[in-house]
Amino acid sequence: PLPTQGSLLYLDTLRAAFPQALAPRGTALLSWAPGHPYAPAGWPLPSLYCTPSEAGALPSRAAALRVQLLFALRARALRVLEAGLAAELHDALAALHTGWPGLAQDLALGRLSPQPGLPEDVRGRLQALLAPDRVRAAELQAECARGFEGIVQRLWPQLEVLVVGTAHGAEQLYCDALRQADCKGLPFYCPFYQAAGALLGVNLWPEEPVPRFLLCPDWAFCEFLPCPAKEEPRTVLLGELWEGREYELVLTARPGEYRCRAGEVLRVAGFHKQCPVVEHVRRDSQALSVRGESITEERFCRSLCRAVGMWPGARLVDYICVESALLGASSGASAPHYEVFVELRGLRDLSEGQRYKLDQCLQEDFPIYKSFRFKGSIGPLRLHLVGAGAFARLREALGSPLPMPRVLREERLLQLIQSTVVS
Image (cartoon, rainbow, N blue to C red):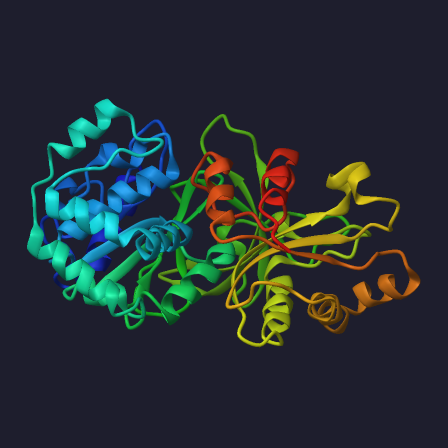
């Protein structure tokens, strides 16, 4: 579990900002931790949660999220909906979009339907916790029939806040989509900053739109490399940071563990009682580079969103990139290039002109990329459209609840996403 001090700080901050948030059994959990129960943010107060811990430890991510969603739907008086990752909240609500008739039937009958990844013995234990609720089932049917904009607030009218363990970096895409549709009108609170499995900071400002984290000196040993890196970089410590500057994180999480560069860049936003307050900037480990050009995750996403905005009726659901070296012989004899897989809503096919728009946006946004393209050192980007649910399958295949990668490095994951291409 998280350090006790971190969870207690979270609970105190949550109560101060949202007075009813600590109501007994007023929090539902959506999080997958295969093989072992997930320790929620408020673990020192287990009475907060209406979700059985066994539901999150199922071998299947899709099964775990559906079971947890069913238990959440039982509790109309929820105050807090908590997810380990924004992608988990996103995928659970996507399951609501497609599976609400079955969920309503399970609510009405007080049962848990068999499904892949849900062992029969576990299903029996979880089903024993359910009771028929035809009134709630009818309410679910009526609200889903009205459409899904603002569905979360309509299903849980007393809900105060959505707590998301990770809502920055790669997860920001899902938060933005949820804010505009299913979770319209509700605040998001990202309480913790974690890296390499260690808790490093806590967000004491839940009502601010951009998460800021107070770095706590006793939770892990942190060092910082000033950005941009010098030829002979020297790390600095917490007391040597400057406001407004960016630093790459170097982490030794526990005594005896190796010191490593975490691949994350932070900006010092200010200080709170002499401790630095930071904002997450980017993950350098997710930069694209086939010729040393280094296109960062957040800037690539900006270019992609600009290109999607030129495709009438299209909305970006998800994406992932591959550097052509991973494709091996299947990439042909062409120059090194990027392959991009996107899931879209509102568009079933892409013309060659639409596909070229992304390459054009990258050339406009990155002069070094344009230079390599002009010289032929980098080949044209190849864009693929994947079917609905492809990225939920990819997250299942990752095997652990980690923030979504934006650059694939494993052949097995590449083969999975290639198998979902529809255009």
